[in-house]
Length: 108
Image 1 (cartoon, rainbow, N blue to C red):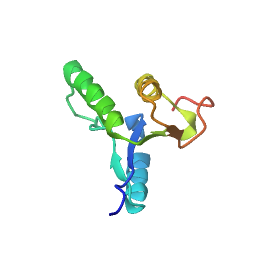
Image 2 (image 1 turned 45 degrees about the vertical axis):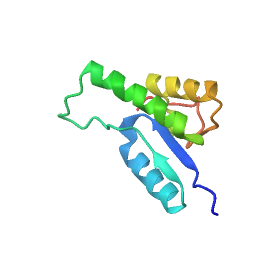
Image 3 (image 1 turned 30 degrees about the horizontal axis):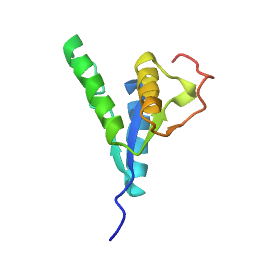
């Protein structure tokens, strides 16, 4: 019997939609199951505060499902929501990796 594929949860600012798509594709082609933010907030989208809160809770549940977390942070950028997700991942014992070194961020 084959081992189940690794589940990777992508976290990061949704402003990096292109980077999310590229990582999702490469990880999926490598045989991983990828879970990512549910909403990218395209211009014109109407997301209420209640919906934003629900999406945040849903993303924490995705972290619970994952074997590891990969933070999409071009230039080292990590926003408030992503910091909360990283903290949650650490609290639940999930390994956390980054696409770019954290801490050297420039605000996009």
